[in-house]
Image 1: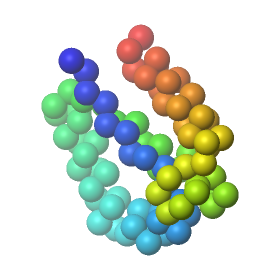
Image 2: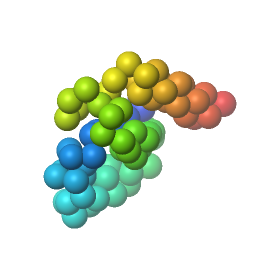
Image 3: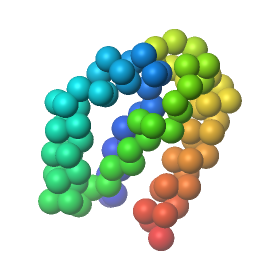
Length: 82
């Protein structure tokens, strides 16, 4: 089994409140280190949907944004599994 963790896109408000914190960057760094040690992959999509109008609320993408996200995740997975 291949494990892939996806760091999901969030609204600009959510990103500025939580993803901009130094502790979040430190967490991501440790997660990447752990992924290399344990053999799983991380897809960091936190910056993929930068516009507020791509979200219907603080966490959920609109249908067009979700479609774009799904396409991009598929591309990333295809690259990982080649």
